[in-house]
Amino acid sequence: MPQSPETAADIAAIGPLIAAQRAAFARQPRRPLADRRADLLAIERLVLDNEAAIADAIDADFGGRSRDETRLVEIAVTAQAARNARRHLGRWMAPRTVATPPMASPGRSRIRHEPKGVVGIVSPWNYPVQLTLVPLVAALAAGCRALIKPSELTPRTSALMATLLAEHFPTDQVAVVTGGADVAEAFCAHRFDHLFYTGSTRVGRSVAEAAARHLSPVTLELGGKSPVIVDADVPLERIAHPIAWGRFLNAGQTCVAPDYVLATGGRAVALGQAVIRQAGQFYPDVGTNDDYTAVVSDRHYARLNAMIEEARHRGVEVLQAPHDAAAAARTRRIPPTVLIDPPLDLAVMREEIFGPLLPVLSTTSIETACAHVNAGERPLALYVFSDDRRVVDQVLDATHSGGVTINATMLHLTNENLPFGGVGESGSGAYHGRRGFEEFSHARSVFEAGRWHASRLIAPPYGSLFRMIAGLALKA
Image (cartoon, rainbow, N blue to C red; front, side, top):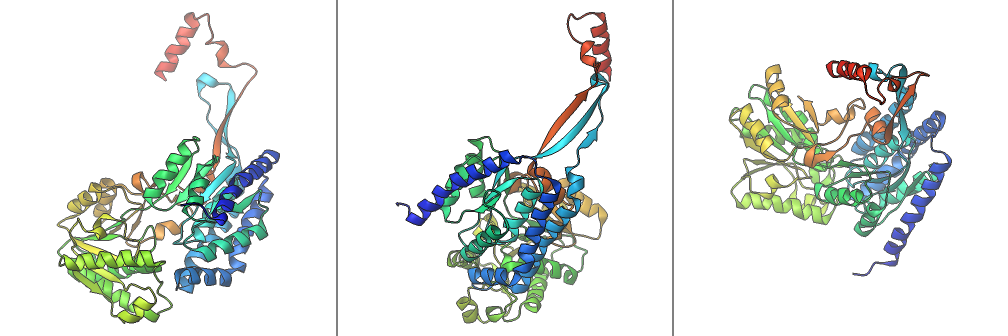
């Protein structure tokens, strides 16, 4: 199919924007601390001063997005990231002195964190402000320049981000390219000094392949099926609240949302019922409830309903919070749904759900729960509920995941002092706080030799002194 004139124009704009940013980076390769702090303050003010406009745009794109959730997960998270980076940036930027071994003495060794250059940021639709601007915070803190490709599934928010960023930054420092999948593909085909992608594992592979052609480093923030392991001794009502909050926030359209629960102690049905009761208290009358977010598109809505119907067809017990089905359908809202012990070959167990559906599976022990997790790909997040420190350590030792929250869900990603990222199929690289600054920086090693240095003793012609020094080095 031929490209539309708009798509062709969007694609044509990418190269000149990158060239302009490269030229600007060449003119100022080491952006001063004061300028970087001003950049971070601009991001903080951008979200705080435009909260209503941002909430309106996201609400319109979703066809119903909780304004309070937007305030929490888009505005507050972004402002806190910018504020934290601004507060600590001087310490992050300072050269770090490291020890010098005897073989290189006398001399001094240090590490300088220097900006990589022009970076590309490809952001998703589910948190279209936070997942655009928090990576940008890291890039600006590192002194980089950034070209951004936001999602076409949230066009109003993408257009607003383009407008607001243009008001705060020149295009040779920060610029936005909008458009669909063709534009994203062309975007990733360009050479960047770092490419940052948040989205699906399937597309992440294509992004990595495109970056590999230029040997560009990549950060891949992907997803997967994040499990919840529940010890048999934890009271159900205490578990139900954080699981329901984590699963049904943003109608489950969250990369680190609990994707399924492994319940020990024969409590799958009771736990599922407790989660549904809690969801009903969170979101009464989901079809008209402004606190409950709609599914982002008709395609995703149909996909999620197909998962539910497939489970029903296979005889799975399906629990749903009380709701007016007609009102929910009119507003593209799927009620909080729990599926008890679905067979593992169903779509809901094979695919990342990304919606308000929660499978709850029976498992005989913590060991079998860990084995189930290890049989799949490594998830972006893992959750364990237990009051027994030995059980928690057992799960941590036996499994792998991007991050972990114990006795709650999703809270690990709110801590700017913890790196956020995946492992294996759930991603590579990490960001947030100092780790984000380092992700977009090159750790440049600097060794400064004294007037006399050890190479004078280990240069040819090799003799007894060389062999003595080499022998000492081998024993050190």
